[in-house]
Amino acid sequence: MGAIQQLISSFAGATDIYGPELVTNGGFDSDLSGYFNTNYTITWNSGIVDFDAPNGGNGFFRTGQVPVDAGSEYLFSFKAKRGTVPSLKYSIWSDGDIIGPTPYTVGTSDFETFSVQFTVPAGKTWVMLYPARDILVAGTAFFDDLSLKEVL
Ligand SMILES: [Ca+2]
Image (cartoon, rainbow, N blue to C red; front, side, top):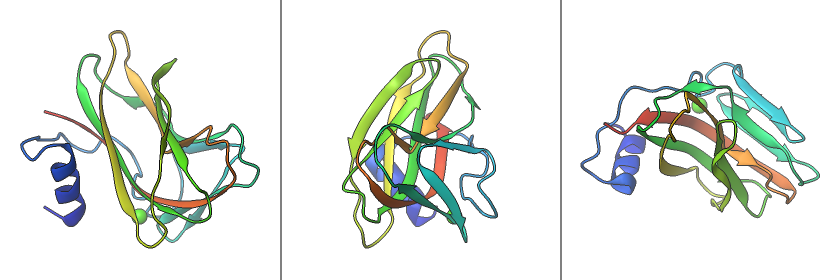
């Protein structure tokens, strides 16, 4: 078990067990394939995402549709580091908000793991994961290791 896994486990509860990785290209190993953005720019930078919201406002950086099971619990996590942006907002969406844009902050010196557990509502078969959505303020940040795993 690596350091990141340990951090997630201690955050979410040491007894939780997780299923396999459900996000494709969450480590941004060679490009940003499978990701989408509007009004904010995302640039591949040797395995991490350089993120810039030059004008703040509404916009997003998100995955495509990730298949999930209604009624099951999942752990959404990613690593982030602040550039110049004062705060960020994450979101989880599936033809409507599962978690609407929610503020979080990360530091400027090292990547920090951010994670949140949620249950997929009835009738939903996929989610889109947003490390950044409608952050409103302008600035830069960095992202890596985006992940979705079922809580077993
Ligand atoms: Ca990476």
